Length: 329
Image (cartoon, rainbow, N blue to C red; front, side, top):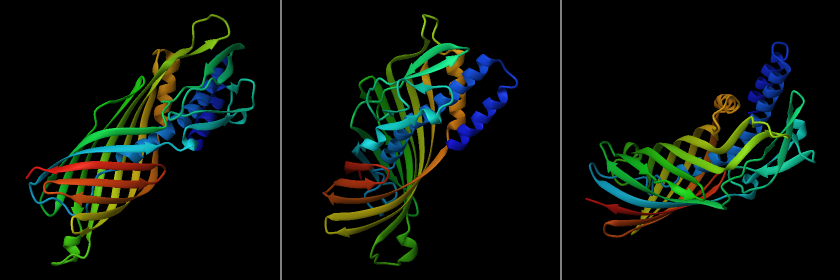
């Protein structure tokens, strides 16, 4: 992120020799807003990756060929206080200045509302913008449906769907597909002391964050440069995971070590003027791939045609998944 912002700063510095003063000022404002917006969105992207990677398995064993399960899961993820806000200082900014202070702690997408203003100038004209608000809740919880189908060679495919979940004026949904392949079949001829599997999945976390409109407005009554009323975040995550499980009578104990490769596409919504369009174009440049790791620990109790599973996941966040799995045949 710092390297990309530095590159943009160099671009705008070069522009000083080629463009007018107003364009230079506008470029510096854009650079500052890119820095703030990237830090604002990043915690939501991390949280979405953690939630979308949970609940893909409750055993390393796979379904028999053409066997089908339907499951209803629920995730609950608590936000650490350090992810609800971030610090920004005037030393990091080019044109924007924190009003009445040298630095400020402002909400991220996972935070609440706080009235922090930034002042900036374009051609000597004073403007202001308020820090955005977050979804204003301490955790994310959502149900989702998951269908599993057994295929050949002890391979299983999972499909996931979550309807839109509302939080105040915002909403989010998750979609995904996963494939699990049993590895124990390649190591053990008959009795298997433990089940081992490799699992990979792709998930899309769609967050639509809406808030009261914010205006980038001058100190007078002139037309605002832009009006922002939300942030649209698409977080993509590819999970690679090694899973182990062991059966004990009606219980299955499982664990997994996972690696996530994720990237986000996001933009601000509002008045589709030149300023906002240009800012969103540079937000596309800032979309970067990130790596994260997590560990799971779970337990499942088996009934006749039902499984009741729980799974605890730890990484950048802590997530709890609970699910009921029904075997159709």
